[in-house]
Length: 323
Image (cartoon, rainbow, N blue to C red; front, side, top):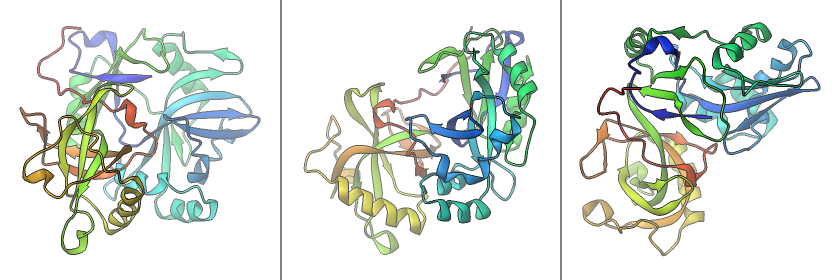
């Protein structure tokens, strides 16, 4: 289940508010004393996070399916997508164990979908959270943070002071609707950040002579309905490791045809080399321009857990909702 982008609700007493964690969404399935983590595009990512294996022991033999976020923290204790991205793409157990020592992660569980034969998805949010709190105690690499009722503005301000991504509002009576982006869950962002599809690249100079910027876009609707719309170029935020990895991936995806419609023009498209629209990246930016371009975009990392056909433009809130 996913949240819609929006504003704080005007009847906050009907909503629960949680911190929006800047990490990797994952379903944790605990069966027969072992836990499996699955990304939103149904890839088994368990091997990449060996420090989470003992989550099964924390349930004391109970079987359950949890929803949550795999999060890594920076030196200031803030969730960092760049840090967790370092952990996301490593299925080799030995390398994953080494990286776990360098950049440990925490599984933030925020919902309970099933346990001991009970399908909990049709239960109200508050009951699911009560069951989750009773089922899972905080451990060294997992926790089930509490939520607040009716205090969305206060939590949003606290998140703003900590330079966090935002908050998520969930109706107290909301059921869990898998595969849907529902109005009963709402994300309120402090800083703009979203996934975008890579459709091409521009050669650069200096250390980035093989990659100057990525040409990125989005679909008009989910499931790749309609053309890929150009959202501009992302030319900052790359580490040397990012440049090497992206260089390899882009060469393998190169194609003579332009995936964008309309075809980009002007100085930002000079020397463009196009690729099949299969890579998804996370981008931070200041705002959308009136012409539908990103302003001051910066690369945060690859999203191997996202399918390109699901990437649409998330409309920035412009007014307070009446819901």
